[in-house]
Length: 256
Image (cartoon, rainbow, N blue to C red; front, side, top):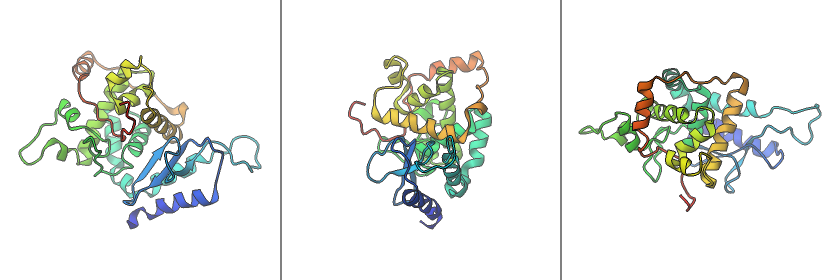
């Protein structure tokens, strides 16, 4: 896929020319469809180190050398799939009061900005939304357009996924990590874990990956708290608590 060659070349250049310390923040590989996959650890031999916030061993300058932002921002500059939907991310970020960089990081992790992604469990699109979840947010099956097909539309997918993420951020107002864990594994799973990230490798990797991407895309000093939620919206959130979650990442862990 020629439109993805710049990103493939970028990963190859990183693998060949730059080998920092082993505790890297984010690893990545590009599949045969040109879709990038990110992880907080090297899940298998396909993954190459994408970026780290640790200086190379032979650095001559004192202090940390921030190599990560250049490489991560380069991906968002050259990815045609990202550029095709960034206006939709801005729209959803404004409407649902979510940090734009958090949406960037989540979608990069969930689907690599592949709008046609469908998980084995049926999660659809950029934000990997389950049809059952979308129905809870008002999407209805139509004669020739079932909910799953509607979720293949980028704007619809981002709007529904953002609504769901916003609800989870409200559930855990001071713990973005728990909101992300609930997006991946389900709200009830996080509650059963004692309001902690569940002890599943898949979910823990998912949360760490998004937070690492987010930290680079949006410096901590610039992060702002979401606005307060009105009572009516809080009541709507409570009504939605029993919905299936849209968790996107492939759940290989048998303990799910």
